[in-house]
Length: 221
Image (cartoon, rainbow, N blue to C red; front, side, top):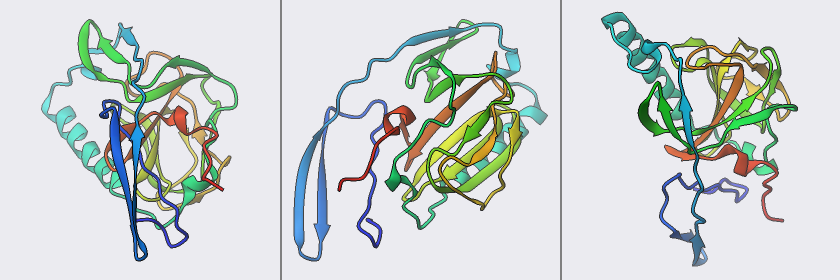
């Protein structure tokens, strides 16, 4: 559903079909558009030296912790703020960084093939400020997740959720309204990480999006 102001956002997953039909229905009628999806060019990334429990967790207590954290993340993804925080476009959450991994690459962890990496890894020193890339409402703020370390999720409206992993410090709380450019935390290497970086992720109604494609995007005039 579009907002009262007429804004809407649509996202396509890593493995989306090469085309889809977008159909707009209003009280005055309907119109359709064929959107063609360019194929992705995805890397293969090998990461060695990870602790075994970050690749194949074992133990009743750890598995119970991971299950409880998955439930909290599911609540964050279910957030549906009645805002259009995405309409002003996005900025990169770090002012200085080196992109150490692109979205969608195949991950091989300690020699084991794993699911694709659904984030853009931005390497920067520990403590580097992380900025909110667009307006939104904090859907989750947890300083110590097993895989993600310090994790923040921001709801930008209409099911568009952005995530910030491995933080050394979190400066916001759940339910807080944040503005584009506001510092929300700091880069770290907590969780499943071999060096300080920000893993920036984005989902729209469960679809994994490349957040870097949102940078400088603007709503039509």
